[in-house]
Length: 192
Image (cartoon, rainbow, N blue to C red; front, side, top):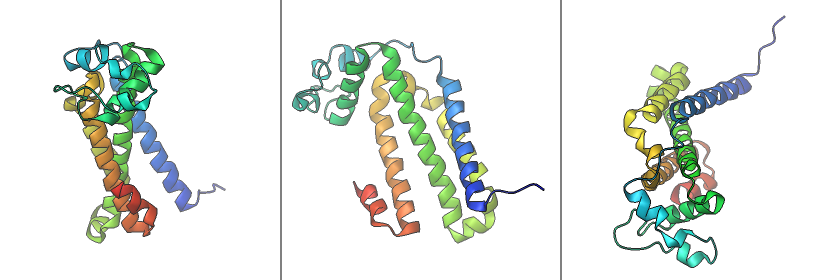
């Protein structure tokens, strides 16, 4: 006889499979973007940015140069560029790989937001609950693979906007989880 997985486990496997599909779709779409050279603001924000040459002391790293650079006033972006520089100097593949990782994380969080939203609201759950995961995957794939998102991976300093989007989506996801579970930790993450 065929044994079925418990429903909670089958649900987790389905969610994991949707995540794997999303990750592989993004890797397939952007696998050839790792050699795109620095251009436009990348030159000033990376190649000419002396504050990313060392990770320590941390003060200069989190005090990016002023003057209208993409990193100006964005210490986290500058720190992420410094980490890239520490790992690979000015080799472009590492910068694009981290941009793709940020984009993948944002896409996975969007998958969670759409799925949970369709299941959380009683009216939406009644209408779309059975298809919540496939719909969430479709929305996430459409968003992640849309041509407008290309520069979030290929244009390195676009990381500023990608990180903002990631943290915004993470805030929404944490809030949704907090409303579902009542756990204070989710609310703290949403406000952090």
